[in-house]
Image 1 (cartoon, helix red, strand yellow):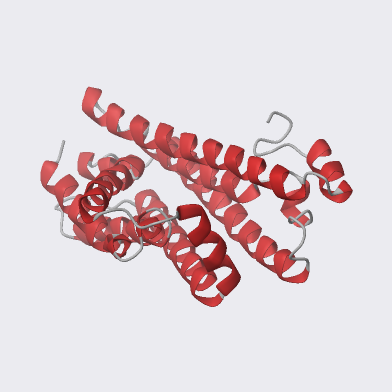
Image 2: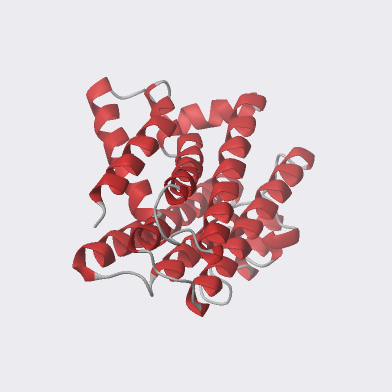
Length: 256
């Protein structure tokens, strides 16, 4: 383990998501996207200063996809919340009262560590100096596909909700599953894990990468479940929604 690099990335993640002290949910939303982007950028900078060929073409590609993913997500979430008063009102209702500072501090530290674990497939490959291979490139492609799916789904949902605020999004990627943005995010992090599997060594590195991946998958699945529950409460008696929900899987095509 390169604890200097890991500690540096942890500090970078903390700085990037510290806005959560103003609004707690930002630790997990806007700060999440910015922290992922900041970690990728820090890896590119650190890699440029490491002797040897640590920054291989495949790793650079993966880090650039990660940087673009985090920036796009952070900016999208910021614009959605700042530019949509109705969304801010709904979000405030869901989140409730802001927790005390010590709770925010604990969440801040936890989120910083989680974001470092999630990106482990890339920064551990950098630390290990592993050369490019086919598995890395497969991971980069999966990352890119997931990032594009999530970005397109976010835009389609925004457009459809603007046109029909009384109904969930049902067109475009939402014909495939009810949560294509969550599906895209899961694919993105699966790609990050794949990008690192041929580089990981030792129990510690495998534990870090797997903990990050399992946590984000659990968060996505639980988020989809809670979203479906909320939609049932709000739209369950709407025949349009009932027909859509009954024929469309929640997050994983043909499965769930």
